[in-house]
Image (cartoon, rainbow, N blue to C red; front, side):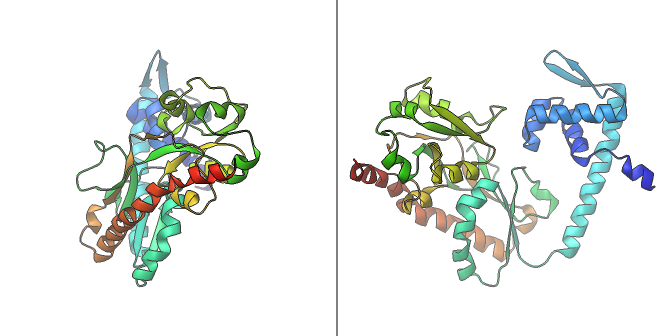
Length: 323
């Protein structure tokens, strides 16, 4: 038995293979698992090398399972479902009273966690566990009570509660605005380092500079340098540290503008096609603590709306003071 366990392929490789075999697309499977297409392709190739057999036929713009791959996929799918069911059973058995919230890493770090003390103050008896993961968790599994997801209006499921939309505009540290090259118009960005959210698959083009420049000009602008990060909270950390200019996502970073850690040197902006929605898991719909948390989320979204909208105007005064 011990020898057999040592010979098992990586669980990540098996999950990637299962998704690719189900979607018959490395690109779609990579999007589902929140990894890059190249990383998933390398995982499948490593799995094929470890097994010594081809699992896919790679055709022009098409992917198909080989006979061996199809048989292996059926077995892997069954066993992964068994593992998921076993994990769910353990979670339910050991679960302590409280509330589990699933959301993205960036939303948790930048918006949710800084505001949680107000919920705890209003509901001290309700324990909150925040599960920050960029993978989409199946709410039917039973281990998550509420999910805050980044969706289009059309993509939001029935019963989802819309919290707010999203606006994007350039932001920088006050020190960079004071001491660096001028930042008075979009063309001035050519004299600065631009900080990007890495999106190798091109799945979120509206969150990166080309989309903003196409809307606000000048298209095709070439900055003096570029820096990329895999997570948006890393983008903001680098921007606060004065490493360059980033696209600020309002209201995720509204507090950073309100308290002066970041400024918006010019208020050219555009609206994202997506917003943030609270979705309650079916098993948790009748729980009063879940209702209290969703009501708190809605209240925070409404209460902050006025100050966050005003926060995008404040940097103009800050910029004028530094001239």
